[in-house]
Image (cartoon, rainbow, N blue to C red):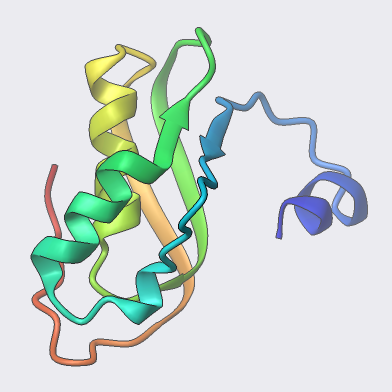
Amino acid sequence: MKMVLESELALSLARIRVDKLIGDIRVPQKTLKKLNDRIENAQHTFVVSSVAKFQTTLIIDDAVGSGASINQIACKLKKAQNTRKVIGFAVTGSLNDFEIISEV
């Protein structure tokens, strides 16, 4: 997704860097069936590596199930004062019996 937005669309947008940590044991969100497990995994998986500041930030995700990843990234951006408002967008989604997280 990042490559398409940056190269094919030639958008010159400012970015806040968010890194996904990959440790010895990688647990993909889609393998976790309980909402609390997804939230906890996302808390420990993403790191904000930027000092850039914006009024509004758009998070683009390829797919959303529970919303835990977007929600945890939004929480980290707001806590680090990188942004005041966050908008989450996913290309596709699946409810799979999850209660969607809709607010930070």
